[in-house]
Image 1 (cartoon, protein in one colour):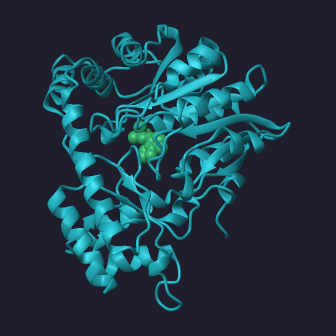
Image 2: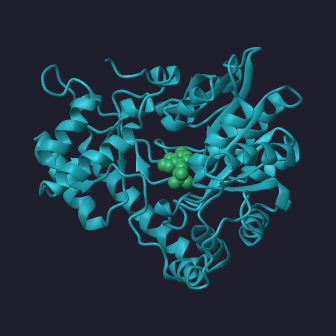
Image 3: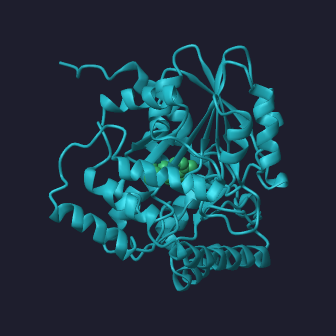
Length: 393
Ligand SMILES: Cc1ncc(COP(=O)(O)O)c(C=O)c1O
């Protein structure tokens, strides 16, 4: 007998290609290959000691039971304090929902706000989970393209041009994965002006908010509090800022009705983020933040080094990004008619022949590009670049 059918929605959802790279790296390493992983989207630093200590204390205190769905009060207040001290915007406890990672935060938002017949505008090159989650919610993603010649800057006009009578939401990510580009405060204001008072939500993924390397005004919560408070939803995360990717902690910040709706979705799926993780994330947000300065300085150095080597070589045409921890060069100059016809072919060859893992631009709807994460120590980054040059000849 044939297997029973999968749900129809699986026909339209693609598995995460970034996770596929991770799985291949894992397999090759288990087979003994010495891989330098520039594919992973996570900090290489270990979680800081004071954060781990808070988790150990939570365990010692048997803080291992169900918590309130929206998250423990201490953590929600710490998130509130984070926005107030960083951006001067105050959110009440009932505007904050803790989630199992920013990814789940975005998922809850899509499930709570979008459904069949709705269109949701987002940008490409972009992080694929955003559009896949929109599809899982039954809605249709619509794409506005950003361009290398403009540093992939997110501008209001192409996003607003993509709006139709069926548009129910716009989702943006700044700093962006994979481009590292930002939306400026002025462009965000223009975007807000274009949708204010309309039946359209603006969702802003701020998961890389603490990873901006050049002085660039980026008070997006401030702009939204001023001119779009009732329609704006923010999503944040402890993953990238505090080297806590495996802990799974993110959050949603929105007006209380939306926060309650997102919490309702969560109450029937994960219930809440892990109790121990919540205590750890509270320690992360309340604890010393100088660690972040050290990390930012380290990443800035790596970004500048890798971008410099690419510029010197000339074949990888790269825009130096303002934030996140990726470079996203145009690699069409090293493609050919035989073995490296596409950036996917190139990524595969780099993995199997140079033992350097990178993510092909195809994963972000940008063929012809590669994403390289500079989340390995400088010596490894140098080694990776040498391997790439040796492979390319
Ligand atoms: C753009 C973007 N948003 C959100 C996330 C979610 O991260 P997490 O679920 O670990 O908080 C990621 C992770 O890669 C990301 O790149």
